Length: 229
Image (tube, rainbow, N blue to C red; front, side, top):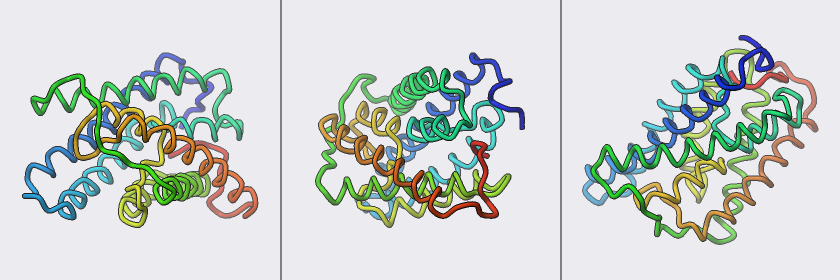
């Protein structure tokens, strides 16, 4: 894989914007479809939402990884910049591309399903349990990324997020861009704007914790300074 330092900035940002948009479209769109078909069974809807997210995430990391590292996540990009794997000068543009992509993904779903383009989520997700869940989910995500062996990040990250949908109280956003994008959609996967700051703060704490745990564990077989995959 070519180093990110040799990839033109325009292509790097385009990959992050498009990849994040498609990730949010997968998460939100599958949530809309699942809710419509599940007949009120929330467990079935979440299962369908999980399956689509796992598959979509794996494919997107494989497709966009060679161009941008396939972060699609400001917390991951910040961690990679901290470790020197992402040029610091690219961090802010990368985060902005991810945020714009997240909103574009939400709007794309609204267009496909005939929903009002502009809307705010009314799905409140708040409280200590939710915040703890987001910290745990994000710490685990960073740990998986940082310790994945060569060529394994796409499958390991997708599998981890799929599992975290079910073992965390928050259904594992683990991504500030995802929280930002999902607040623009009053659908199954949405989050109320007032709930977003708490989620983002918890995700930042979780990312820092994941970095610390990785450093504490020390060098292992799968440790790499390169971003996924």
